[in-house]
Image 1: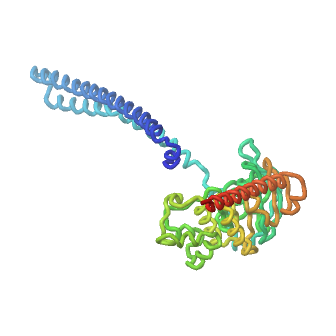
Image 2 (image 1 turned 180 degrees about the horizontal axis):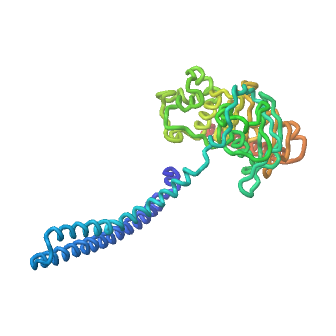
Image 3 (image 1 turned 135 degrees about the vertical axis):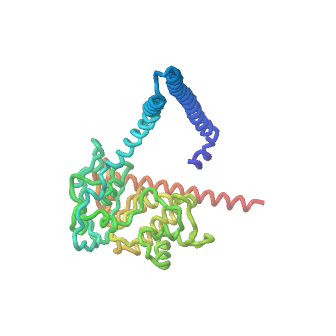
Length: 392
């Protein structure tokens, strides 16, 4: 969070916060060392005192003839065999306490059910997927909170479905269910007529190209990040995907082009560039189903228009699911579902939804008015700038 700390000028606070925590750790560690020093010194004194007393009295009895040399050495050996293990028992108990804590943490990981353990046996041969998607009565809950309620729709291969609605209405949850990141208990998701729970998880995910809300890039080259879904892709195929995602020109401006290294999570790129690289990565995979989960939120209107145009030119190659808050991104979709509180409030095309009162028409009116106000402000600013330049 270094950038956030600097952006809010919180360096002094964070340094003081760390210094306070570090100081408490230092003081407790120093106290622990002092206690251990007292404990081990006292235990050593007691052990050596016992051995010294034994040796002293043994020597006295040896001089009196009441004890033999062999008996004395045997007793000293027996004494060492008892005293030192007892002395080390304190350290054993301390280390055992730490080990129990570590074992409990490891147990949480080792006891977790493996994804493969609950997966199905791979059918032979695996079906060839075209992209037809049907959902029947799908419901899902997080604990007692129902996130999706009786979701149903049918999407032909090559069509585009748009999901709109407020945050938390269940749109991204549906994507996680489609990818089998979560397993649902009620309803069905059919992929070309095959219930996805009857198919291996890896196979289902290989049929879906996903651009998630928060795109993740690895600390590798741009080319390696784009080829994540198809490592064998040629440079021409990579360029085609990045051109469709409207990022090729930006990459070409980098000194090393596609060999440019990006930082962890793509920290050296802007938010819009990260999103467009994620779109290119999904397009290069060329899957039957393409999911764009709010994938255009960080790009400007002009870039959004070019990307949507490129996606429309690819229409029919993928069954596309678009999740967006900007309604201009979904106006050309074949089907639009308006989510509210985990259920579908409205369904139809852009034209039919504008004809009926409801959330979609209200959002379209609000966003249209905002865009008009912005355009008018830009025009006024341009006229003002022109007038000022014309003054002597």
